[in-house]
Length: 184
Image 1 (cartoon, helix red, strand yellow):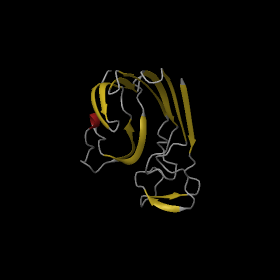
Image 2 (cartoon, rainbow, N blue to C red):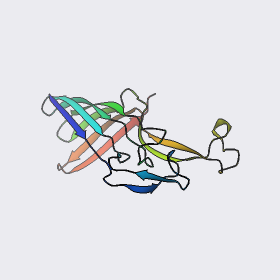
Image 3 (cartoon, one colour):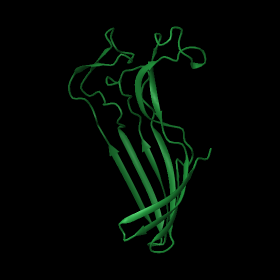
Image 4 (cartoon, rainbow, N blue to C red):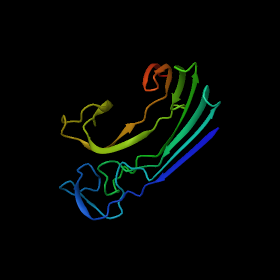
Protein backbone atom coordinates (compact mmCIF):
# COMPACT_ATOMS: atom_id res chain seq x y z
CA UNK A 1 0.00 0.00 0.00
CA UNK A 2 1.21 3.47 -0.76
CA UNK A 3 0.06 6.78 0.62
CA UNK A 4 1.18 10.04 -0.96
CA UNK A 5 0.46 13.48 0.46
CA UNK A 6 1.47 16.65 -1.34
CA UNK A 7 0.90 20.10 0.09
CA UNK A 8 1.79 23.40 -1.45
CA UNK A 9 1.52 26.93 -0.14
CA UNK A 10 1.99 29.59 -2.77
CA UNK A 11 2.38 33.17 -1.62
CA UNK A 12 1.93 34.72 -5.07
CA UNK A 13 1.72 38.44 -4.44
CA UNK A 14 2.56 41.62 -6.27
CA UNK A 15 5.71 43.40 -5.06
CA UNK A 16 5.13 46.93 -6.29
CA UNK A 17 2.32 49.41 -6.74
CA UNK A 18 0.84 49.91 -10.20
CA UNK A 19 -2.38 50.92 -11.92
CA UNK A 20 -4.26 48.30 -13.93
CA UNK A 21 -7.21 48.56 -16.29
CA UNK A 22 -10.13 46.62 -14.82
CA UNK A 23 -13.41 48.35 -15.70
CA UNK A 24 -15.57 45.50 -14.30
CA UNK A 25 -13.95 45.69 -10.85
CA UNK A 26 -16.33 47.28 -8.33
CA UNK A 27 -13.46 49.40 -6.95
CA UNK A 28 -12.46 50.82 -10.36
CA UNK A 29 -12.43 54.58 -10.78
CA UNK A 30 -14.37 56.43 -13.51
CA UNK A 31 -11.64 55.57 -16.04
CA UNK A 32 -11.89 51.83 -15.19
CA UNK A 33 -8.55 51.70 -13.36
CA UNK A 34 -7.64 50.01 -10.09
CA UNK A 35 -4.60 50.52 -7.89
CA UNK A 36 -2.69 47.32 -7.12
CA UNK A 37 -0.47 47.43 -4.05
CA UNK A 38 2.36 45.29 -2.74
CA UNK A 39 1.10 42.08 -1.04
CA UNK A 40 -2.13 41.98 -3.09
CA UNK A 41 -2.55 38.37 -4.24
CA UNK A 42 -2.09 37.49 -7.90
CA UNK A 43 -5.46 36.24 -9.24
CA UNK A 44 -6.00 32.67 -10.40
CA UNK A 45 -3.57 31.08 -7.94
CA UNK A 46 -4.90 29.36 -4.80
CA UNK A 47 -2.85 29.97 -1.66
CA UNK A 48 -3.02 26.33 -0.57
CA UNK A 49 -3.45 23.04 -2.36
CA UNK A 50 -3.41 19.50 -1.05
CA UNK A 51 -3.30 16.23 -2.97
CA UNK A 52 -3.77 12.96 -1.12
CA UNK A 53 -3.59 9.57 -2.88
CA UNK A 54 -3.82 6.05 -1.50
CA UNK A 55 -3.17 2.96 -3.60
CA UNK A 56 -3.28 -0.74 -2.87
CA UNK A 57 -1.65 -3.15 -5.32
CA UNK A 58 -0.42 -6.70 -5.43
CA UNK A 59 2.90 -5.82 -7.06
CA UNK A 60 1.88 -5.81 -10.70
CA UNK A 61 -1.37 -7.67 -11.53
CA UNK A 62 -3.90 -5.22 -10.08
CA UNK A 63 -4.25 -2.00 -8.16
CA UNK A 64 -7.04 0.01 -6.59
CA UNK A 65 -6.59 3.63 -5.58
CA UNK A 66 -8.21 6.90 -4.85
CA UNK A 67 -7.42 10.45 -4.05
CA UNK A 68 -8.65 13.84 -3.01
CA UNK A 69 -7.57 17.17 -4.48
CA UNK A 70 -8.19 20.37 -2.50
CA UNK A 71 -7.56 23.95 -3.61
CA UNK A 72 -8.25 27.02 -1.45
CA UNK A 73 -10.12 30.05 -2.75
CA UNK A 74 -8.53 32.39 -5.26
CA UNK A 75 -9.15 35.85 -6.64
CA UNK A 76 -10.71 36.25 -10.08
CA UNK A 77 -8.76 37.73 -12.99
CA UNK A 78 -9.47 41.44 -13.03
CA UNK A 79 -9.45 41.57 -9.22
CA UNK A 80 -5.73 42.24 -8.91
CA UNK A 81 -6.43 44.68 -6.06
CA UNK A 82 -8.28 41.89 -4.13
CA UNK A 83 -11.11 44.29 -3.26
CA UNK A 84 -13.90 43.56 -5.76
CA UNK A 85 -17.32 43.15 -4.10
CA UNK A 86 -17.75 39.63 -5.50
CA UNK A 87 -14.92 38.30 -3.33
CA UNK A 88 -12.89 35.17 -3.97
CA UNK A 89 -13.79 32.18 -6.09
CA UNK A 90 -14.48 29.58 -3.36
CA UNK A 91 -12.13 26.67 -2.68
CA UNK A 92 -13.10 23.11 -3.53
CA UNK A 93 -12.28 19.46 -2.90
CA UNK A 94 -12.83 16.63 -5.39
CA UNK A 95 -12.41 12.86 -4.92
CA UNK A 96 -11.42 10.30 -7.59
CA UNK A 97 -11.09 6.49 -7.59
CA UNK A 98 -9.45 4.13 -10.05
CA UNK A 99 -8.49 0.50 -10.59
CA UNK A 100 -6.57 -1.54 -13.12
CA UNK A 101 -6.01 -5.20 -13.76
CA UNK A 102 -3.08 -6.44 -15.85
CA UNK A 103 -4.57 -9.27 -17.93
CA UNK A 104 -1.16 -10.31 -19.35
CA UNK A 105 2.08 -8.57 -20.32
CA UNK A 106 0.40 -6.51 -23.08
CA UNK A 107 -3.25 -6.07 -22.03
CA UNK A 108 -4.63 -4.03 -19.16
CA UNK A 109 -8.25 -3.43 -18.11
CA UNK A 110 -8.85 -0.16 -16.25
CA UNK A 111 -11.64 1.93 -14.75
CA UNK A 112 -11.78 5.30 -13.05
CA UNK A 113 -14.33 7.69 -11.66
CA UNK A 114 -13.41 11.35 -11.51
CA UNK A 115 -15.37 13.71 -9.26
CA UNK A 116 -16.79 10.68 -7.45
CA UNK A 117 -19.45 12.61 -5.49
CA UNK A 118 -20.40 14.79 -8.50
CA UNK A 119 -19.40 17.89 -6.59
CA UNK A 120 -20.39 21.19 -8.20
CA UNK A 121 -17.48 23.61 -7.95
CA UNK A 122 -15.71 26.46 -9.69
CA UNK A 123 -11.98 26.50 -10.32
CA UNK A 124 -11.47 29.84 -12.07
CA UNK A 125 -12.98 33.33 -12.16
CA UNK A 126 -12.79 36.45 -14.30
CA UNK A 127 -14.45 39.85 -13.94
CA UNK A 128 -16.43 40.98 -16.95
CA UNK A 129 -19.51 42.77 -18.23
CA UNK A 130 -22.77 40.81 -18.18
CA UNK A 131 -25.18 41.99 -20.91
CA UNK A 132 -27.86 39.42 -19.98
CA UNK A 133 -29.53 41.60 -17.33
CA UNK A 134 -33.11 41.54 -18.62
CA UNK A 135 -35.97 39.22 -17.63
CA UNK A 136 -35.08 35.51 -17.72
CA UNK A 137 -31.45 36.42 -18.42
CA UNK A 138 -32.27 38.06 -21.74
CA UNK A 139 -30.49 41.12 -23.09
CA UNK A 140 -30.86 44.21 -20.92
CA UNK A 141 -33.23 47.10 -21.73
CA UNK A 142 -30.94 48.48 -24.42
CA UNK A 143 -29.23 45.62 -26.24
CA UNK A 144 -25.62 45.41 -25.11
CA UNK A 145 -25.59 48.92 -23.61
CA UNK A 146 -26.73 48.14 -20.08
CA UNK A 147 -24.09 45.67 -18.84
CA UNK A 148 -23.49 44.90 -15.15
CA UNK A 149 -20.05 44.11 -13.74
CA UNK A 150 -20.05 40.41 -12.84
CA UNK A 151 -17.69 37.69 -11.72
CA UNK A 152 -17.87 34.85 -14.22
CA UNK A 153 -16.72 31.48 -12.90
CA UNK A 154 -15.41 28.46 -14.76
CA UNK A 155 -17.14 25.31 -13.57
CA UNK A 156 -15.20 22.17 -12.74
CA UNK A 157 -15.80 18.92 -14.58
CA UNK A 158 -18.79 16.82 -13.48
CA UNK A 159 -18.55 13.15 -12.51
CA UNK A 160 -17.20 10.97 -15.29
CA UNK A 161 -16.71 7.21 -15.44
CA UNK A 162 -14.00 5.77 -17.66
CA UNK A 163 -13.67 2.08 -18.50
CA UNK A 164 -11.13 0.87 -21.00
CA UNK A 165 -8.75 -1.67 -22.35
CA UNK A 166 -5.13 -0.75 -22.92
CA UNK A 167 -2.69 -2.59 -25.18
CA UNK A 168 1.06 -1.95 -25.00
CA UNK A 169 3.77 -3.44 -27.18
CA UNK A 170 7.53 -3.10 -27.17
CA UNK A 171 7.06 -1.19 -23.87
CA UNK A 172 7.09 2.09 -25.82
CA UNK A 173 3.86 2.11 -27.80
CA UNK A 174 0.40 2.13 -26.27
CA UNK A 175 -3.10 1.89 -27.73
CA UNK A 176 -5.99 2.71 -25.42
CA UNK A 177 -9.64 1.98 -26.10
CA UNK A 178 -11.83 3.85 -23.63
CA UNK A 179 -15.53 4.21 -22.97
CA UNK A 180 -16.60 7.26 -20.97
CA UNK A 181 -20.00 7.89 -19.46
CA UNK A 182 -21.64 10.71 -17.52
CA UNK A 183 -23.79 9.66 -14.60
CA UNK A 184 -26.00 12.18 -12.82
